[in-house]
Length: 262
Image (cartoon, rainbow, N blue to C red; front, side, top):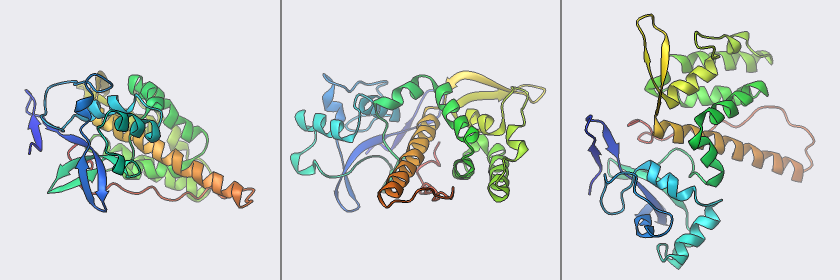
């Protein structure tokens, strides 16, 4: 089985799979490449059989509004077996003989605007800071601190967010601006998403190129955070809780192997 290949620059290209959990802990690929006359299209001919690039899987799932529509399409096309209709689907990569789940969730039609224009995702993340959601800022910085691109900035953002939570007051350093006019949270997000280099004076210059796997991870992370806390709010309403302190559950840290190749 092809686990990964390299491109002309020698960079590792990882194979991803849309998979169904047949039994607990046992996954089988769902061959979306069979849907060539429908929603699937190859971005580049890098992989054989059921292996795809992450972008190819995202472009496929973003045709649908949610998991229900996705499964209905797969069932109509005969790609998903009727016996698997109620079983979990996920995007996974194979590493050390185990299929590791890609960071959080699949992307759907509502996510297309952010993938087409990452600046909208950056604004969505900045809105968290403007709204005073320091729990998000803290967990976002913590869970992406191992990404090489922001190893210097992420600890700063986390420390400022932790101070804000402790003091119940926004740390002023969260609004310090760098040479590009970006606050630390924005700089961290840009470093994750965009290709960049530092000039001779040490200034960060952002390029047009996008780090696609990082972009997917950041968007999926924000979606997962919002979904969990929307559910928390709905539960509060059902049990009659009028107000709730802003102490959010910590977002699960990715398992080893999910992001280390990025």
